Image (tube, rainbow, N blue to C red):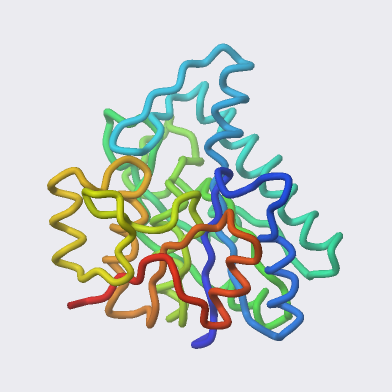
Length: 261
């Protein structure tokens, strides 16, 4: 498992000319073990609008009440997960789509009552991932997870967890070689808008505290910071560029590397 690359992809990186799936298939054919964790926030927001359900974000994360949870689960564990899995398989790859619920992969508890049914990762049961990887599959992981800790009897067994920390926790559990976040920006930018090629833990924390790193970038940076002592390389790159993932794994520059010091 030491050579595993964990890739977090979000809906914002996909477009008509996107090459991410193509790159995943190419890397798999080169015998690179991969785990894909996906989001899909834009698709969720679209489906919530169709149902007349308002969307609210706090610190870059979606507030999830019970009606929202039903839609989020249907979209992320169903539509988005199976679209990505199907696309990989159609292009000649070997992928199996699962969620954090399957095999109790991601055990979570409620993060903050203000956020509703939004969870924080408490435990990763990596057995199902290791089995799939050993059998030559790319696990495609939806962030819908198991609400198993501090749960009341009348609460659902499902909980919505941000895919960014899930990717980090999976990378740590597997002892992955790389953790790569594919975003729709060039990397972490300073207050002048310039991409920072390499940033230390202390510098990243200061940028979060000052508000320079904000919104959806916060959970990505925090996830990288949490696993620095376990994962060899943590990267945030622009996944909208042609073959960004393939070039990244093969040693391309660009983006931001987060380091301990």
